[in-house]
Length: 544
Image 1 (cartoon, rainbow, N blue to C red):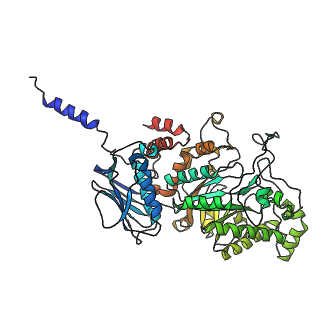
Image 2: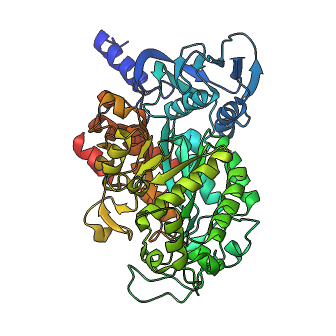
Image 3: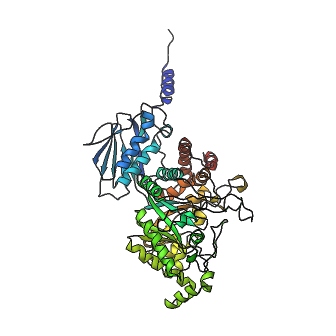
């Protein structure tokens, strides 16, 4: 009989242990980076027998529990049961503690159970997303498993900013209800909290308004679309009619609510108005004729605020919008509004004289103030692009800073709440890699993942002023984005970077560490069937 020495036994044990697929990864790779993570040896085995146990809940915990139950259903062949009771073993124990901050959660994965304590049902959902990212990627594809091993860990977490959003433009190019729902799923994966839905513009009106049916009969379609960047050549193909019915919008709102995401609709005024004016030409300064715009840009044909019927129209539209969308905020645009037509318009000049307004910029400020007062009667706050600061805008209006950070800094210093969306950091229709000739067609500019990640939304402000920065957002304008696959490419993985900007404290941010985690996140994108830009994979490889 041959002798087996001690070294051989040790080597054999190392090989056997190293090949054990059931052991969880000793690292926790979550995006956005949690505030505190403590990794402990061992893992929890999630199985079809594991229950979701609500110890102390909230009225709207069902979506969070349903999410986790159905996430593993494809792998286990059955959903996890949801029960109520005292703390249990082999369970995901959930307790909502109102004394905690609303978006904060503690997640403890032990050998016998998973315990979630959270300030609200939304925070429970965030804990579920962290758990999800700790599971093998095969869960996303529904790979058959007897158990899912999850690393033992203690996570204490909450977001830096409550408003963490992404805007989707459906006016220039339209995306279907199913595509919009997939977009919402992408937001949920990254713990983003706001979907800014850009619904009206010169090139298309995309929301049904029952009081004004011509908006979708006429305004939801254009005769053709310009080829490239206003080349003067057109594709000759009618575009539309494309719009969302109110029933479809209610469906999307509920889908977002089930993922604890608030939708902020945007109804553009007083500029970007051609789709509306083509439908109701009497709302313009000249009376038309107008047509839904076939090219891209900023146009002089805008709403006529000298005409009282224009305010009746805005109020009629916004009343239906306010009834549809349960969130507190309605975006009213306010950007890129040329005032040349107002200078020549007798009604606008008469309005200015009556209201003692010195210049046309004051007329736009009059519009914003009047619309804000109307929205207050509906229990809503207005959000507008940073142009609304050009007048003496109310302190209750929220400013969305898009022309760099300057408008946001000005707004915060004067006491307005601000959402930072600086175009040089957060415009995802800009190219994300060079040479741009190798990239899908885009509007221009250059915003790579590292630039997005470097955004500090409170930079240049005192701590007190920084409190006025309530959020960050990325914008995806769709002039040159014809398909949802292209949209996903422009969003991912930059969406992961903006998510971490909004969630993770500045002191915890580390781009090299983010790259490593983002590389693993792209495996999840792939499993989910999302199209994504792969430049980050090479960058991560270079940094290894």
